[in-house]
Image (cartoon, rainbow, N blue to C red):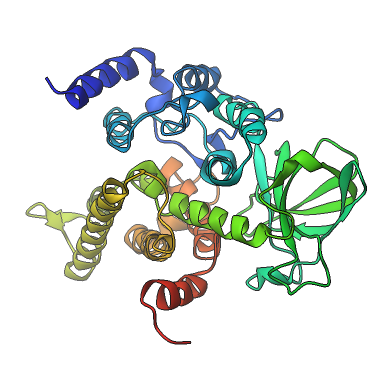
Length: 399
């Protein structure tokens, strides 16, 4: 038996013995665990599952063991994901600590920053949010105006961020700030980490049409940032910030999960949904047009998954690709949006549920998920921005 076969067998046995039954059921958005000091575990099994996985470093399987990670190779990471999928095991914890700031600290952080922050992400002790966009700096992010001034022993931050996902639950925020207002807009930016447990940081949730409020406004009024929490060089934060976006896009598109299925698969598989709501004839969906839509989407999803996996295997370090992440982010976002639109059409009026009184669990979840999915083509850079990056950085087309 090869080393990988032995690892697969041992992993399968461990997951079977340690993953609680309730953690093998489809996961709704409200069931997702982000960790941190404000996390409420409505199901005690969720905390048990988190602690068991964190104990092996498998909440961050590919991170180095010296920072609490699992130290798995790319191949081993893929096997772990496969075996978790085989039993329907939920991801024990997710969030920006794993998908964004953690990998960025591995790229650019000092040893002190890595030792301070990464183990607390792995254990779920600390939850992070992102401070990038501002009311006057969205797609043109480099126009940001949040000020960061040197006060001798520390930095002082003043300004406002918007669309800070999960800020109402977060303990720390990683953010881009302007440290040299006289420099060109890309050059005078720094990347800093700020503790949100101070009165100088305040958060205001923004209610969405889906009914949830994952997005917030965040205000800094003389907020304190310790100097050892400057990531990278002063006034050179744009380079760090761009790399973090590549990690984010990698996570959104599924690259960091070794080609796992998309976030909407918990809502059900299209062929089964079609047969339930449309009916079938001779084992086939009873509508040629809808049957073709379902088939094309399924084929695209399968091809996308295989391409994700191949990209991870071809990466020598098993890490995040560079500009190619925009290819995956664009296609994955559009594919997920199309999948939900097909599901709405298949379910007809039963896709318009808003509560669980007149609609079953699947039906009541679909409307909110569909509405929420619209943000997927904006988060991490809109589809239009991704197409620009692909044109310039991947294909090398002229401006």
